[in-house]
Length: 228
Ligand code: C5P
Image (tube, rainbow, N blue to C red; front, side, top):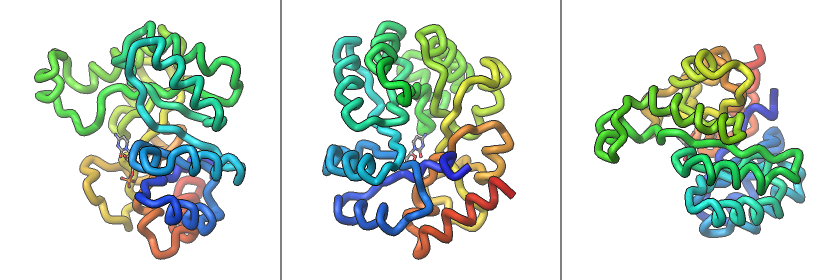
């Protein structure tokens, strides 16, 4: 179960991220996103690899198929367990991403559907005349047709996705808040236990752990909550 908790390493400075990884002995899986990657990406990826931690490289690639192929290929240098791409990049792009990762048995391409910052009216503004749930299901279906089986989704979408697309897909879910943690800018949140019970396979958790005075303690409480 420990490897179901992916800690979002959202720190501005390498030294802070490095000492956090040293401190948080409990965690085995980290997410490196754009904030960290743009400052010190390859260094932190190497550090995590050296420490035998699993990595979710969350750069949400979306470009022409050839460019995404080479972006995923280059990511393979760091042996990530997950690499994210936007499903809206289309079938050809997704197939190329899968192809680029195919030699690495441990790497899965994770499809991002509709950003959770989007409301129905935001989708309409971008020319998509579907509500967010229908758009998410449509994009994930397209992902499956392109060779993907793993997706990032909000806790609210776990049940509809598993009902419509089958329980053998892998779902990675941010927007998680234990009842004792501040919500911050997350609005529609699930507790870790609610998300696991709904069918989440992995939980992405940042500030409830990273902003805690006792990150190991916070991690352990969350782990006990989902296993107990
Ligand atoms: O600190 P917090 O637990 O809110 O961090 C959640 C992490 O997941 C952050 O890295 C955030 O960018 C990311 N994320 C999210 N909601 C999404 C997609 C990613 O919170 N829909």
